[in-house]
Length: 190
Image (cartoon, rainbow, N blue to C red; front, side, top):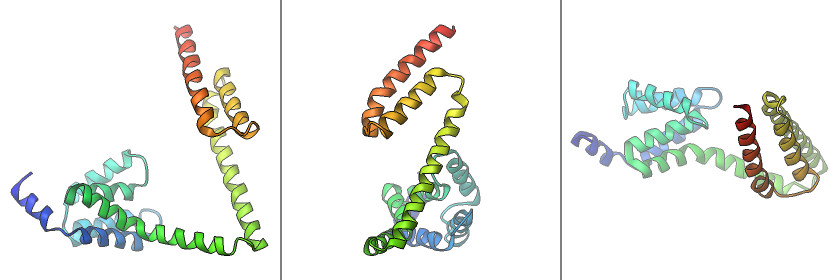
């Protein structure tokens, strides 16, 4: 690292990273708005990184799992101040969604006894369950011609849904078995 980059790192207060990504969280609601605001703040306004560096970070974040904007906060924070910079940037980005989620959760707890709220939450739970089942079916479709895959999917569903076994216990038993069966199938195919 050059001497100039080291001096820049030492001069940048952690509060600046925190407030910059707090602003990104406030202004960048929906779609790609967060990326636009992160670029505006980190490249144009604060000049922490170049346009090319930002493009490289966005490319990397497209490849990584999770929301791109959180990855951008991690990369910019790490580049500017290392691990503590990462913590400051991500904390700044997440504090508002966390506060909103916490507040809404407290409101739900306060009014959980209301029948209308129970019906709303029941509808949300049913919708979430339906989406989860649909996602599971979509993940299983490419394997529909593999009887072992269907068997293990059915076993997992039955053990969790009807036998009421915990997910971890089902995974501990079924994952090694399914890997062994897949290995046997692959050996037979050769």
